[in-house]
Image (cartoon, protein in one colour):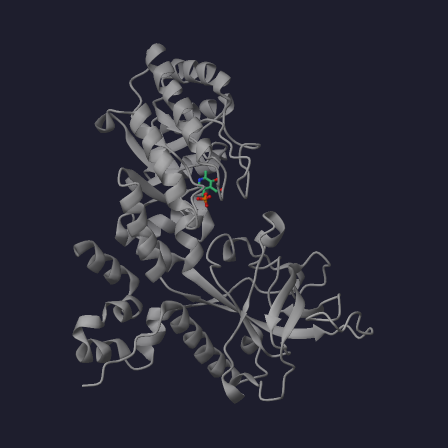
Length: 452
Ligand SMILES: Cc1ncc(COP(=O)(O)O)c(C=O)c1O
């Protein structure tokens, strides 16, 4: 009996991307062959879900749809039992269209339009946030039965994206806001905050939890019904998750020792979405620096890197290069002979490149300088990993470039190329979990893991 050698997750994605490029190259002058595409895999998301369950078992995640609203991904998260943070009418409609019960949705936006408030109420959404007097008046007039969380100011100055400059009531205004809510007969169930997206300082979470406790006590003091929901927002990342989760969990245990009296929820976006997508982009043009070499003793002698132009840029899925100064470092698609037109001889050694998007705008720069092993040529494809968060959702059509991306789910691809997973299962029953992780549709994987 031959045991199938199971590839690592990253290698398998590279392999599937190379396969897709081979297919595209069969029609090399088509528009499609010049379009970027994403390979999606829910395997890493499942692992993140398990990490969340281990580190924050008492905090129910409500995935922030704004981060990546891929319907199939949302369905996968819904199957895992997550709730959803929706921030617009469209997001609410999308999540409801997947069959998610309105009780699993929070309308987590403290400054909503009246039309959105009315639609949310009509659709049965029962929980939203506020941080100002006018929002209370709007809620009274248009959705008086919806329950409210007071969003308080919170800030991690080291976060990748700050939100405190726009949202969150200062602690000093909690009292007048709660008094007004009481006057209007509105039901304030608790407190929410968001320390900033891509948070790095756990102290921001602990400070916010203590301030939330203060607001809970204030509500009791003002004679409001006891608050029973704490929403700790988003800001989580897979890279430092446990470092943030530990202090957060301890702060909650300390400030809210009676865990049965308070339901704790969170609104993670980036944490769950980032590893979902790997992106493949094509080099559509290149400009080599033709000026004389500056210093031949250096590993790469020209100080001005050659320029690569891709079929996607900051007006597309790389907006975080502008918004958060994210540094994007690609890998070349592993060469597969003729299929990617790269048979010609290439210069070897280290090559520095700047990487640009396809638009005519000078700020459309994906990476100021990356050093690649070997020369990159027009027609090559580059792979960008961990591209699931705040990518597709913020892409524009500026300059006429499409923001309608092809997203291929790895599990579908495997199924379509001959049911290899089943072969592996038959041949190596004890060793197939890793392969099945790729082969089984996400939702089944989730249930499988939950059962185990
Ligand atoms: C209200 C709210 N909740 C949740 C999120 C998701 O944040 P993150 O992706 O950092 O988890 C955001 C992001 O802007 C937000 O504004």
